[in-house]
Image (cartoon, rainbow, N blue to C red; front, side, top):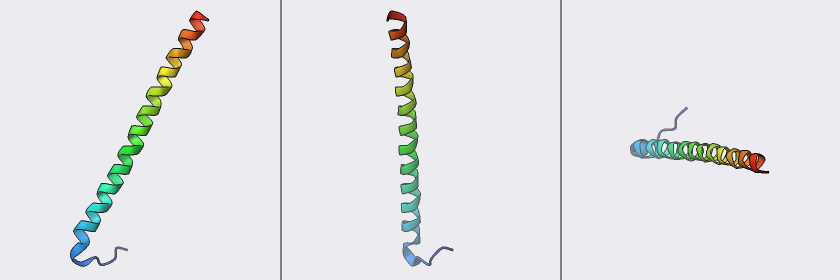
Length: 52
């Protein structure tokens, strides 16, 4: 159920597309950074266990 946006339909729909795309990109970057940080922490923990 899409409301009639008249002459602004393209602008509004592209704004939605860009906003959703940016949100997805932020989530993706956050997940990737979290995984990288977790891997680094695991490396540090392994070094501590070996040297400790």
